[in-house]
Every structure is written in structure tokens, then in C-alpha cells.
Length: 191
Image 1 (cartoon, rainbow, N blue to C red):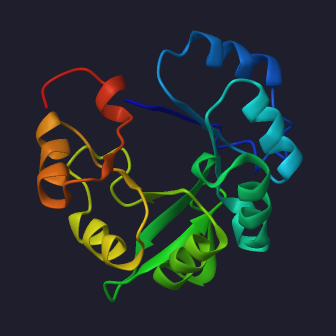
Image 2 (tube, helix red, strand yellow):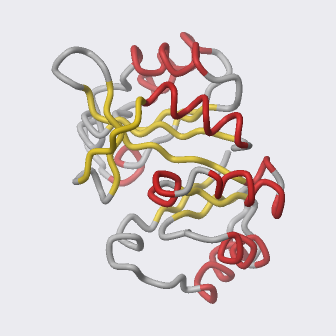
């Protein structure tokens, strides 16, 4: 019921947004649209919203400047600001946050940082399990459990959906939670 488009190379390549493409995408999309990738300023977020997108997703820029959340929330509305955190499991069962397509580990505690982002004004949190991304063997339900206990805002879990049963498992366990999928819709074959 929502489409999230993430340009995962925009930050790494320090690329400016293609606002014409974003406008065309928004015009063709028949559902709420969230766009992210390389967003570093309130002005960029405003331009994307003016292009017809309902939400902007930010990730790497949050690490250096968490206050950006507050500024964006004031400018475009809390409901339009989505934080995307890419995480990997640690050897001891915790989770580390990564940026730059999972190449650079950040020294923030996932749960404290999520709570900080909530207090600064994000409207939604997307948690991407790098470990489960693309493997199509199910979501990290323990991660979903832990993040649900920490923040009181809409959460979408990404990474691992390989069948509709995986989505149902997540929804049945957590009720009101977003279940994102990518590979499920791209790859065809036996699930």
C-alpha cells in the first residue's frame, strides 16, 4: 500500500537528485510514495515533496546531523520524514548501524539512536536487516521485537521477505507494523 524508492548509491556517489524523474515517478504512482537517497538538506526534502512525493527517507545524513530531523519535520511535517537505519547483527546478539551500503559501521547504539530520532521528530522508522536483505528466508523477528519495545511510532521492517507467509508471520506477531519487500517482487520462482 506504499512504494518506497531508495537510491542507495546517491550518497556514496554524492549525486544530486533527478527531480524530473522523481516528478514523473510521483505522477505515475497510484499509492503513497516515499523517496530517499542522498538527501542532506531541508531544501532537498522540500523539493522532493514539491515533486509530488508524500515522504522523504533519510539515512546517512542522520548520523552526522541528527538535528536535520527536527528541521525537516518543521518544514515538511513529521508524517513526511522517514528514517532508514541499516543494521547488522553483532557476535553478541546486538545490532550495529551501518551507512554507505553497509560498508561503514557507525558508533551509535541502535535503540538509543532510534529513541533520539523519535524525540527529534521522525514520523516513521524503517529498519533494514542487512543480514537478511536479499536472502528471502524471513524477517529478523527478534529485531522487530526489540525495536517495537523502544519506539512508539510507525515501523517498517525490511530484509528477508521471500514469501507472503513471511509477511504474515511479521504481521501476525506484531499487528500494526509495516512489512517491506523487494526481492519478493523482483525474483520469480519457487518460494
